[in-house]
Length: 137
Image (cartoon, rainbow, N blue to C red; front, top):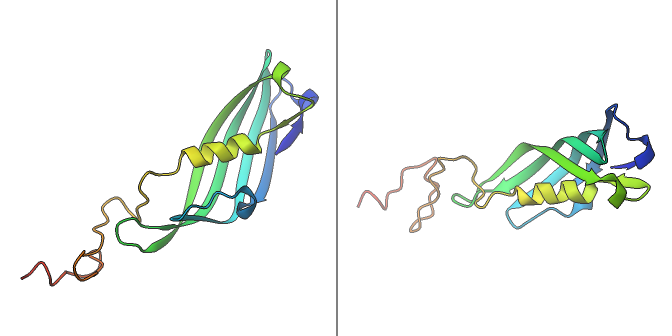
């Protein structure tokens, strides 16, 4: 998302854009971004600062760290960025900063849901759906 600096005034400007997820190279071994990343941001000048507020909405497929099942989810990131107008050129491009915010918000442990029971280390049964016979011995 790119905007000419002189166009940013004290009156907020709203911009929306869809970016293909594969263009941003966000995938990890347990998170795969799919479809588009929807950006919806507001740009406003406050003195010498340019404040950018908005949302990045993503769709991703995660592989649960406990049960190894895949799940598709929609994730929304509320983002606020601030730039000194004298330190940027003619155009303000926020893509790299938004990408960084998404990466910084990756979960440490990817789970399909908070109370995921995982799989049995002996027989491999998904404990979310079945009772393990190993535990009954």
